Image (cartoon, rainbow, N blue to C red; front, side, top):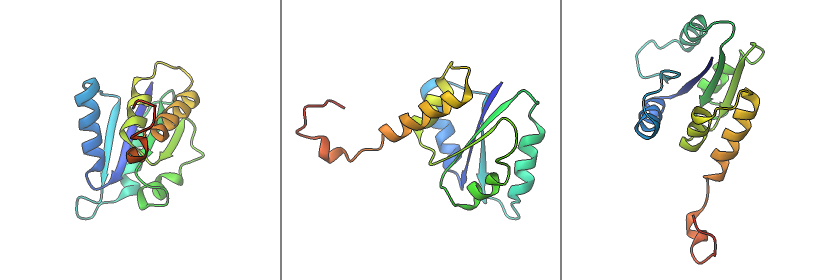
Length: 134
């Protein structure tokens, strides 16, 4: 089974999950990690807890907020783990594409998700007056 973890500093992950569920409904395959909102937060302990709830057949896609941030860096230590995929720069388009995909190949799901996330980042002022509709 493919599982998605949105892991961010503070409550960004919570807001993103709530927004995704507002759009596509409740998703038990999506979980969150809200880092550093509680005193004595231990990110390694939290990550180990996430991994302890996976089966060998589960794919885990972790979507973090910022490359080089403490959340991203902590998860990066597990990059060699089988069936583990770490993507930085999470945004709503990326999550929706990954969550809604019926594609079996997780690599292809990630490629499409990243492409969707990038396509949604535009300077909208520059679109006015152009023939393209957005």
